[in-house]
Image: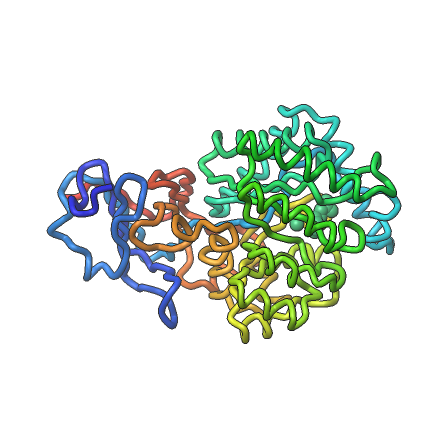
Length: 423
Ligand code: DI6
Ligand code: FE
């Protein structure tokens, strides 16, 4: 990109935008413009400051008419590739069984593992593609997708290949994460350390060799793996050059976040049972707290993540759907933002920052996406609302007007956006 050249034919200018900016007190630029060049943001800010002498005629102009424009949403924690359904377990939980009880009885994650192992790559792709499409229609332009329902080398690689295909076929950036240490597969019952051997010695090298993951995650919990077992996975991951992240303190305090911070984790996720020691370690290492109110809601949790503490310590809070069949069958980032405000006490602005700039940090891609600023990818969403609170307030409905990804309009439900040529 030659930034000196200015805007030419083939580039586009977006005017009349209420820009949601990551910095500043209220953070809205009321009469804003975005200039897009070669798929990236060339300029963004108050229209009055636009360098007009560098805007050549002939380019495309979109007049947004005062709608709010945010960065493309970043869903930084999903398990959206799965087969089968866990509706029966949902019914069991409605009758009083707990998520942990179902898992200990061999259901839960292992139920989905069975279905994923049986599914062909094409079947998995078809089921999962629908979920990607739903996210996209609500403004998601970057989605992280975890493996973790294969729990055998071939099946884990199958999931990660599906993730890659989804990224190639949809106008969404897919960031794949290897989650081999998600649950203990049935053939390793009573032998968790032997399964960790398999993850470390066979799966991780295979994932690295095929370049199929950007980071490595694990589930540190009573019903999953101990901190010592996760440490073995993290050490091996680090030796192969992976950044790590962790499902930590979801159902109990395992000191997982503390351990993750020692490995310079990108993020620690869930965190309902996080205590001050873990939060301080995260603050020190710049580890992002990923909050997942969909899982909190769906599992009827009572204990909330320590939002006040995270704020006090300056730990960035990201927000994500956790889209998965067992604890958060949710493809609505907007509903998740609503839940984060109602259930966890985030402000609407914090919720939006959690799905944009902090979501990008949780994936280590904040230099490329998450903000409306020069040099970032031209990934943004035009919403038929004026303020963050208007976006977060309804429980349902979709005020998305347009989704732009890499400068291209990829969702167009155009309500009142007019386009033409620059004069
Ligand atoms: N925590 C969760 O909430 C998801 N995975 C995890 O480690 C749930 C996955 C599932 O129940 O299928
Ligand atoms: Fe999860």
